[in-house]
Length: 114
Length: 113
Image (cartoon, rainbow over all chains, first blue to last red; front, side, top):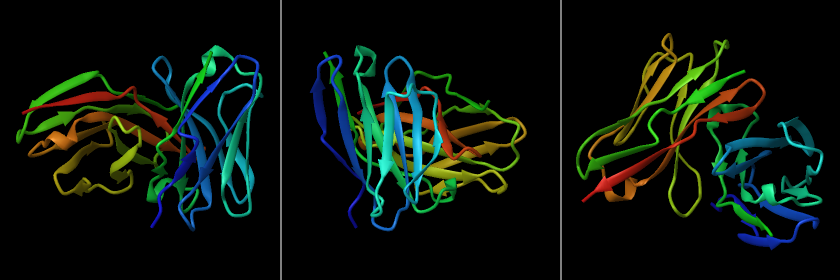
């Protein structure tokens, strides 16, 4: 069974631009969460989607947004990129919203802002 | 707010030996989940083991086991018969009632051949 697929793997953008990252969860998984990983801040929760609705959001500015489609695929968007947005963005999917089954992660998108 | 602390930035172990990675957490909740994830250089976060807080029995997955001390809020990971493929960053994570994972800073595990 296919795992969580994140595209693209690598991305280089210029300050001020916007970017869209994509995540396809495991088939049947309805919960999709996004995390940002940086050397300085570690892993931080961005947001969680379930049944096409954002259920929870972390402490990030409004430049960070996302959505989930009816097939559970999710996208996250970052507008007006800043140098500090350079990070590994990880997507995770789960069968349910609870932690009971754990989360399956993709390999991430490495975003570099120059 | 919940916090997760991994006090060992780096650990090294001889191949075939046993190593224990430490994790403590702070919470006022009584029901929660705890996880250990492994992140090799490939970047993908891989679930190693999961513990449900209401279960007293420590979780075990092949060579990986945990020592879950709920009262002490401690959740250590023991890796037996360490293999070269175990080399990675290991993260302890707490799942909270806001449906998110709270992560520790990670421990880099080095396996010496």
